Image (cartoon, rainbow, N blue to C red; front, side):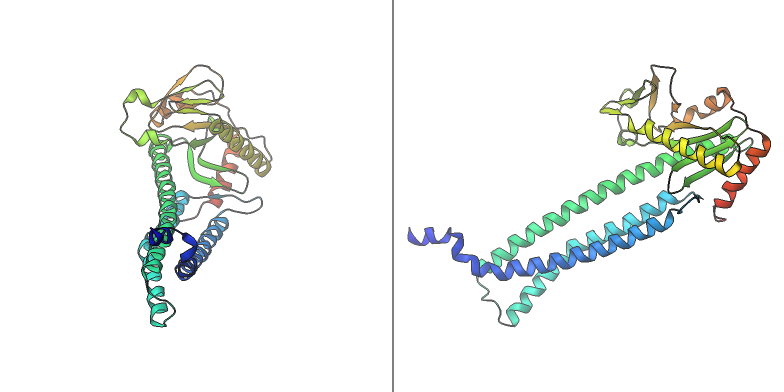
Length: 304
C-alpha cells in the first residue's frame, strides 16, 4: 500500500517535471512570439491598405487579399502541428545527450502531458482561424454574387465601383447614375451557403431590424445607414454639391419578407433589376454625376 500512495503524491515528482515543463514552455514562448510577429506584419499590411485622412480607394480585390493573408496565417498554424512536437522531442533528446535529464518515466509522461496541452491550445487556435477563413470565404462569395448581378445589369446607365474604402467608411458596391447614388452593402449569413430548405432561408424585415431564423440583427441596417451617411458627407465635400447616398442591403441566398414600407431596401441580388426599375429617382445634375465619377475613377487602381 505504501508504494501506491507514493505514486499518487504529486509533490514527489515536482523536481522531475521541471525539465519537461521548461522545454514545453520554451517552445510555446518561441511559437507565440513568432505568431505575434507574423500577426503584426499582417496588421501593418491591412492598415497600409486603408487610405488615411480624407482619401478613398476603390478596388475589387480587397477582401480577396485579406483572405490570402488569412490563408498564410492558417498555414503557419497547420505547420505548427508538426513542428511543435518535433521541437519538443528534439529539445528533450538534446537535454538527454547533455546528461541534463534522468530519462525516467515521470519525465517522459510529464513531457507527453505538457505537449498534449500545448497541442490542444494550438488546435483550438487553428479551429478559430479556420472558422474565420470560412466566414471570409462566404462573404467574398456573397459579394461576388452581388457583383455578378450589378455589373451587367447597370453597365449601360450606371457606373459601379467596388470596395470603396476610407478611414471613415467601407462600401461594398457603389452605384452612380441617373437615379442617384447608392451604397450597397452585402451581408452574408452561413445559412445562405448551407443545404437548408428554402423555407429556412427567409428573413423578416420591419424597416429597422432583420429577423433571421436564429436571431435578429439591428447592426446590419445601422452599419449600412452610417456608411451611406458618411459617404454622402464625403461626396458633398468633394463636389461642393449636396449628394444624398441611399443605402441598400444585399442578402444573397435569402428571401426577404417586409412587414413595413419604411426603411432602406433589403433584397436578394435577383431583385436588383426590379429595384432599379421602380425606385424613386433622386436626380443629380449631370455635372455632379460626372464629378463624382471622376473622383472615384481617380481612386480606382488601373489594374481594376
